[in-house]
Image (cartoon, each protein chain N blue to C red):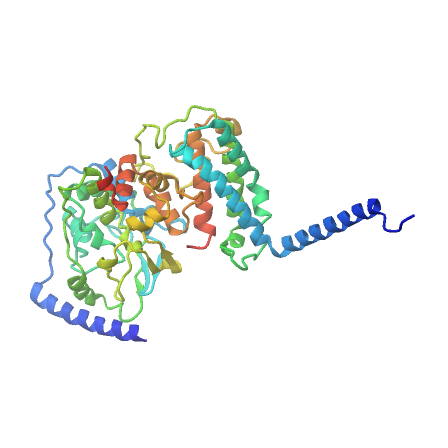
Length: 299
Length: 199
């Protein structure tokens, strides 16, 4: 019951801030990815694995075309459907510019100026570099067109009031670029970039508040209420250590799905491994493990 | 003649004991199929742990042990696995999902795959290790978004991401142990992703 009041109060705040923001801030967020950047489609395809684009934008079990729209993602707010992001000009991103693409990824704003729901993990993607975006864009253009129309999002009131998202973005979202920590190793920084950026591990492993914003204090402490009623385990250095994970077996596990005790990772982590991490280079898997275990001091 | 001849009674007693214990087993089996398969999974997990440590490079690679563990796993796939999943048996501490019986064909395929790939690993244990983690071959699996969309999107094509035919035992035995091991773990993970309760 208390939760409902909390949500109601938060919605009112979000709406108010949203209205104020629209008045005072205006709509467009400038994006200026250097147009001369040469995107590499192979690097972009690899980056798409890192970022998990395919899982949410392809209804694989439903036989959908690549990136032509995702399976239902059931959340406490309602059901989300990843839209068609093929280069189809009518149903996909065919009419978008590189800067439209960058604004969507890093600011969560559509080319029409509409805010996106944070089910689209732009709160993580905001860390993408210009080059990542150019590469990804080049890779997207190699995908065959599909004319499957995107499904409308199916949310409960009051979450279906999309305009209030502007308030949500003002309250909970800063588009921050990633900064290397010069006191840390290259591997640690690369790992942090992957974990907190493209791989968006915190989307499932960090608890969210009643309005769906990540709780930074509890980053990677595990979360309940995930789509399908799942719970994610904590992946903090201490818990990973207690459960027998090392840099070696964690990197290995992200490739092969194995756990230190002879079990395998199933559930949605099985899908993450199948469609994402099993495709990565060894050094990236090691960087992820290195950062998650915070292993810099032992080097 | 003594009625209670020990020489006669002892075997009778033994028989009674044997009969009653096997009865108890039979009874336990009927209601305890969940326990039976959880025990089996635990032993398979133990074998997996043994060989995983070798493929991870934490223990020296020993082909004989790999062969033994892989054979054990392979012997418990297929029918030996599926017979432990009578329809609707999700009682008690079971982590099985009803999806098993809604998609029995897929479930059986994966159980067969386990036998096939663990068998391949046993047969290939002595082959050169091949590229893979820890072998010095620092390779991610490559696949362009458009050119080979999703790599493993269509496992029904008889080919998999690494381009190996999936059904020819002779070809499977030519695999590198690393490649065969990857097939085994992919099979375990695929089944646990689709058919085991989320944890």
